[in-house]
Length: 498
Image 1: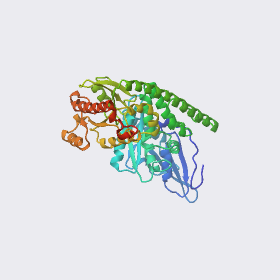
Image 2: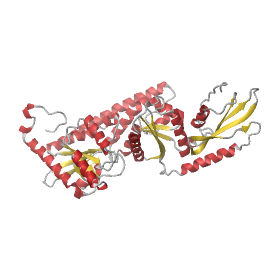
Image 3: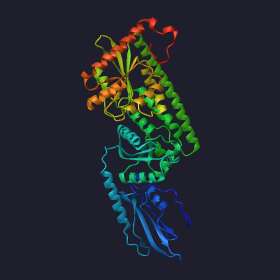
Image 4: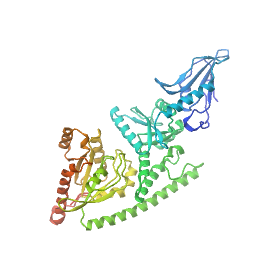
């Protein structure tokens, strides 16, 4: 298996009982210079989940002297997740190893049971690799925890590594990766979720090295969308986004793609099968694109009927879980599904609202935005987001109770600009003010402008309704007077309201 300085470990059989147990193998090898167990030995112990690694120390005459043994620990102990036992005489090692391994696995199982999780839920370790400051990294990780919860995944632990230059092979450092593998073994975890987008080669390298399933933030968002999509249109959009994400990753290890369901081709035994799967995937994307064109056409017909009735449209936009659906329900006395989770709303919902001044508008709830929204997802949801194209007014809802509300505002504004909607008339709505100090709310309203409300309290909506009436009435007056449209013959910019 090797020479005096190194050894080669071939592909090993799967561990007993999957990834949650030790492998059932011991690595015993010689150290010809009587040297201690090396860092490479200990890394093999961790990454291969061996029952133990043992080195037979040899004297200058070739005689075996002592045996040095190391095994993993069922819980982290200081800086290491392993224990190196005192030297044992080779001729008579006083160690009942079967009993030791049994006690280790019993303790590991006890530790796993101590981590609560819902039945049938995946358990995951969340990993962040960043060059930003620790506070920003922590905020980003908190959002990833909420995303995992929305996807029905229990976040067992979070690990953040700050580094100037990400590791091109693993994204994360090899030492930190060994810590993650140990924690996964100790907590009974078989899924890693990275806060950064991984390229196909990184997914393959991490999966091969850790034997854990690996997904990134983008794939997690796609998974949530796949769970939440209800309408035919939403399902088409999600499948298209998944396929576009999957296409460059078809050659990586199957386990890495196991969160993407739907039987969209897996790695075959040869290049031919892989190419067939890629071709089928491209054909399916083309078919879905055609179906989405039909959806857009149908939506266009409905919008044209709405325009003929001269019904103004108000779209509620904002960061996910800011309270958009709750606001729609309170404004229009509806019962749209509401849940305190990210992306609770996926399919757009429209309701009529009659103002006190006796005119009606259509109010539309839209899918929530999130920072670093995947480009493919934004493209695939273009049909849904077209609802905002025809909006006469945007209500930008902000959860003022969120410590990162300013960053969330910036993320939403950046996405609106990408969609060409940033020039539309917009009312900034600070929601959930009932949870905040009134003086803080007054300061933010004065600083950014806008209206303060609690979407759960109808009596707080009067200033917002008054502002909406004023803006919509001014638009209707402008529409009614053609002389006010395109002043001086100047054409409107796309997305602007006349």
